[in-house]
Image (cartoon, rainbow, N blue to C red; front, side, top):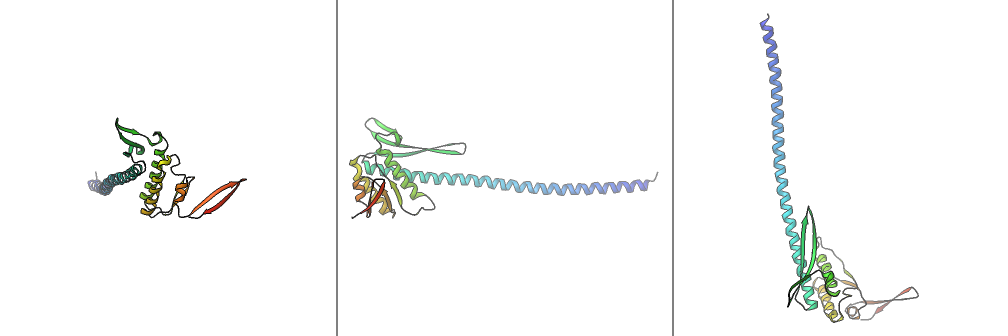
Length: 212
């Protein structure tokens, strides 16, 4: 038996296994480092997600409050009644929806209704008008250009037309925004700095400028 030869083979085998072990340890260390890096990045992403959610919720609540406030003021200014406008937001599986309500304190208690089913069409017209104004002024980046209205408040009783006219003028002046309006109401038309009367005869439209 050649012990020296066997010893040489054992040493060679030992060195090969030792080399494999070192390579595996290096790979393990590299994987451990990568895993630790991934854990830190995951932790950072989770914190960022929470931050974005909180920021988004805060911004949404701020916008909700501003829209509720403007719409409430619009209803009270025009109808001279104790109206409050309320937005209820519900969240389900990463989706959200909003419901709009008009609240009024009456002798029989608090009445809460949706604008579209409120008595008469006047409420929903004013809510729709106020919402368009609120979204326009609160949208970022700011939307430039005029506010275009097609028959605003057409269902509102004639007794409120003067208040609606004053409301539109105040909005235009305070927000420094031009209003372009299509209307059949003579009072609202008379408030404009420039007015055009459009008529149709035999299928042909005629446009006439009305002197202020």
